[in-house]
Image (cartoon, rainbow, N blue to C red):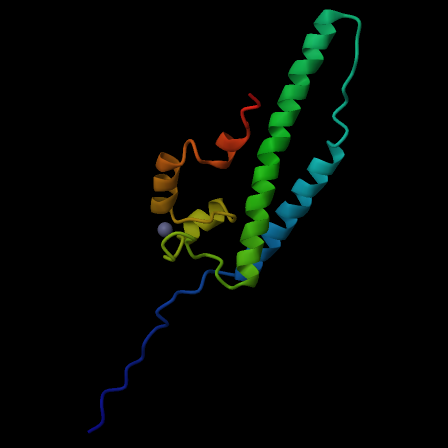
Length: 138
Ligand SMILES: [Zn+2]
């Protein structure tokens, strides 16, 4: 008698439609690139009126913050696409564990599983990208 035939289900569960994620990411990338390029000309408007100046400065600040956020997002989307090409998409960059499909559905560019992300958020408040924006000029 031979060993019993085992009908194993693939250990690594395939994500539903990696190609779909690639499509989503590519669309997101295009959208962000478009959004960022149209905002290249954040008008630096000059006005003799001080109230206007303040108003413009506020709008400019807001626009710059948006661009900031979108650049960061674009970087994350690009990195996720890179992982699709390297076939590591869906794996956590920290622990190599699978990122839950639910999380990927909500955040296709997520690079970490929820546990690692939470830890990174806790530890990385200062070392996160946003925290290094300012070099002391002194
Ligand atoms: Zn992880």
